[in-house]
Image (cartoon, rainbow, N blue to C red; front, side):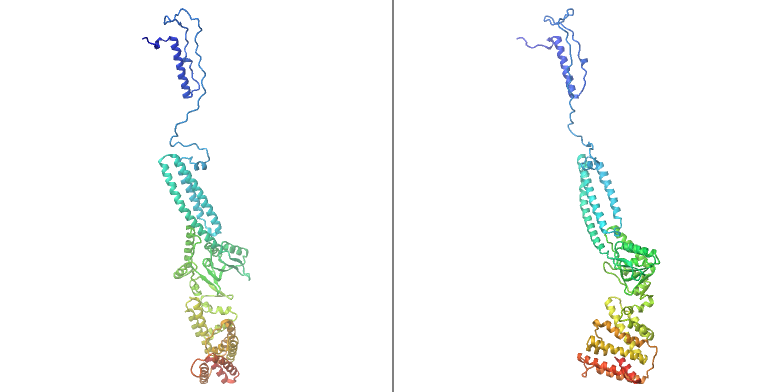
Length: 602
């Protein structure tokens, strides 16, 4: 069998050459397509082909005989347009996407690097925020309305919340894009930060709640009034020590430079206001402060800032521990510092350590109320201002127990009678004074009852003694006063009350106390005010006393030896009035002795 295949070398040389050229062009075109070459020179690849013989008899061309066909020329085909670059099969790990947004938005979308998101946007921004918050916390908000503090705090909390959300969301997204192990750590930090933020919000809610309560309490301190007193001699400051209390007092003294007296009555209030007023008074030594009524809490702090510290008879002071309006560390430290300074100033003034301990032992609304003797002894006050007269410590010991009577229109005569007792019966007066000083000041109601009993007992003792020395005229005036007193009791209370009182039995005066004092006062004053004295004959005096005592016992007891009943006391009132009328009209020395003895045994 013959072979049907043709070997490559059997192809004519010209045809084989053109096939090779075509193959090379295809390779070049492929290279252009793959590598995106814009210009490829192929002329050097093309060579000139001379015309050759196409005789079948021989495989060689005849060089001597040119070919009649035109020569072969090779023109390169036009190149195709360039192809777009092929996309990469993947994005390399850690490659940062170019920032096409603003800085804040870029962090929010996680476009920034993990390091920048953590160290700058989380750590540095948090540090700056904490510094700003510390600055806000350092402000003394008690000097301003608490509504300001609440508004600033709410704004700060909301701002910090927005910043935290921006920080954590951006850091989380940056950690996801990082694809590194640090991204896992960053996400753990975000989770921990969110948990801590929840606890922080709980603390913020507690602080805002405390501030709301503080604002409500602060609003109750706005009841103060500052102005010139009716007599024009003082600046009156009354009410709680709220925001602006000290400033208005300072302004009042600036507007009235001729006034040098501050009259204050306050239950206290802001520690800051007390400190400001204290410093103002300490800097103006020519201003005297007088407590006229209650001066408690922060008022006591302001009070001791003055050089001259007076108190009216009705003034009282209440000491206790200072309390911060806010529970913030800054506010608590401020109040603690001021209280320590207050203690040291009290000790420097001369207060005893025991007084300071008692003054700050009370808490809340409970206060320590020292009496005037303690206030003098511990140099809290320098004088008592009563009726325009200044009383020092020694003189006030007795005067304090008579001031209530001196201010009572019905009791002024009784107070004057006691002044006379101090002159004519000094022993009785001193016994009365020492008895009053020995009464425990608390409870106040029990102390008042004991002092009232001491007063009437001393008055009766001095009366009995004075009846032996007073002139007949003074005894007569006293007897008239007693007669009018019995008539008053008979008419305004009852005949029975009249009879009991005439026999020396205690009665309840009710709403007739003032009228009773007004009735008996002139008689006692007349008895002790006389300058003349008499010397009674001893024998006649004893006989008169014996007869009067027998009559008194007969009137006091029933014939059966039992205490008389109401009807008896009513009848006895009439008998007493009749007896007095008879003795007042009795002539001579015998009548005078009988009247003295009758009044003596009652």
